[in-house]
Image (cartoon, rainbow, N blue to C red; front, side, top):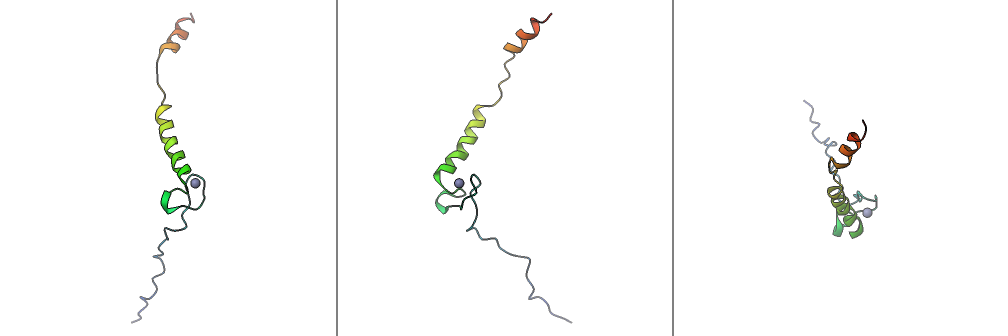
Length: 71
Ligand SMILES: [Zn+2]
């Protein structure tokens, strides 16, 4: 019998330090994680709100007028 249990190389833990800001790829700052700065954190928030506000509103007003005019 051979005992080769000392080879535990597959479970490499990735350190939390060294992660990058998802917004600009700079080094992540613990204080603003997962971002590098308050600026990037705000940018991300802005994206969220921006999307919420720019949601497509389907008001058929203009389209209907356009089609009824084309006879
Ligand atoms: Zn950043």
